[in-house]
Image (tube, rainbow, N blue to C red):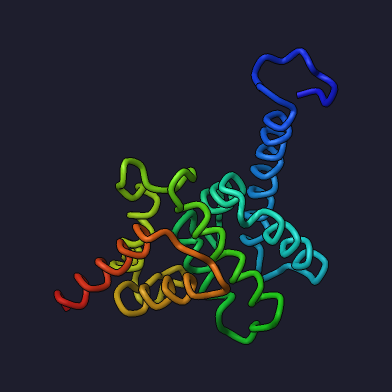
Length: 193
């Protein structure tokens, strides 16, 4: 890990060593961004700008995106639940502004990046990852909390609306398998409702 360690046999070139170092930095930045998203309601202007800087710099990095999404914790919700609750928060409520719009778009790009083939949360052998299945299942079925619980995620129309609005934020390019899985789940839900 020393910047002047040329004796390592782990890398075939300086380019490989730089790429590995960047991936380590991306992972650290992803965890920091997850912590900031988790406090999105109480961030001051400087912290929001720092979060925006982190996500804009790392949103196309699979390492950054996977760390961000797997370390989200928002008001007692983690991972996929936290993602949907944060997306819903950024999308509406009296907070809609330019920075929130950019933060939502960056979050969308991070989901697209992390769920793409070859990414940590992407499909393996043509099958969507467990992380993706859990996200789609949460959108379809909700989290089962009572109506008045502040952490409730309502499934069905409401859950799919939050997920698809997140996916439509910004200019993210989603993998066809991810889009197909979401589409099939929506169609199955509609047919059985």
